[in-house]
Image: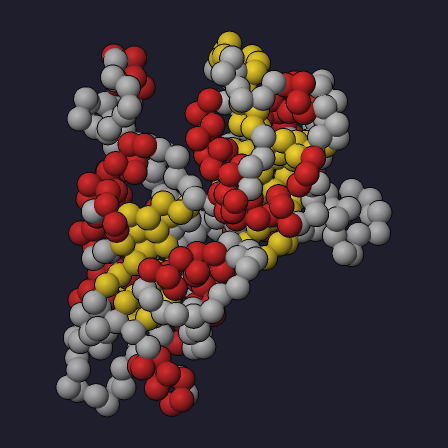
Length: 397
């Protein structure tokens, strides 16, 4: 590290690092927070020959024998953690534990984990009554679903805390049980579940993808209504909302209809730009059923917006339907930026890189007083998307 870079880092109380050498997610957040030094010059992410991970913070002067064990004193260490596919979540989780411990063992004041798609949060309850808070009374059938399994949401939260993590920042975690566990373990103010309502509303209103004066927003089921309403009414806007209802007729089959208490009827989508919103997509079956029903009411176009996009062959096959004009998602799962992960859907895809938005929250939380301007995202799309500046009517091959 150059002397000027080292002096700059030493003057700052904030250090942003990643748990992999080449994670642009950490690099971007660091840049938006004014960290000019590459984080790989601040920490060595080395692995021993026996495969054990051994990170080492390198801010100190090798000739300084006075500050051994206290080189991070007074500093806040931010670990940016995202799953990119080629390294398992198991390994990334272990890296988070050891990096956090290295920070605390060298007297870091605070360790913040930024994990947009929170690891192990899907297993949000276990086989016993006290394994997870739920807004409903857990019956035998619900307990049986988890029989013989681990309550990993609680385990991961407990291990993060024991490792030295003080604050967890995630994005749009939908599990009430997982949120309860983290708030119980970290405290109400130290588990931050960022909702992208203002981001999505800003995009709907300003991107030119839809006509804001001719747009209806749809919740694909009653469970999504609260979130969809937040999006519809964010930033001082007031988009009309249609709420759908689904009845499961099989493990992966649903019947879709409009909810009896929907604020607007299905007929209100005729001739309109329709935006269907959900927190995540894993197979796409429910969304396709919803969009095909909406299509029967002759909207101008149907756009699907989701926070977390889990790319799989089944998902890509389902969402290739003509009922969906475009798919908007975020980079909480960065592999979706890869054109191979988008596959046949790349002509429909736009990805909102939300690193700037996350940095904006950290800026506000830590009182850094940096000027971070809107839009708080960067849009990324394939040349095959008709809205791309480089679109030339290219083939799908």
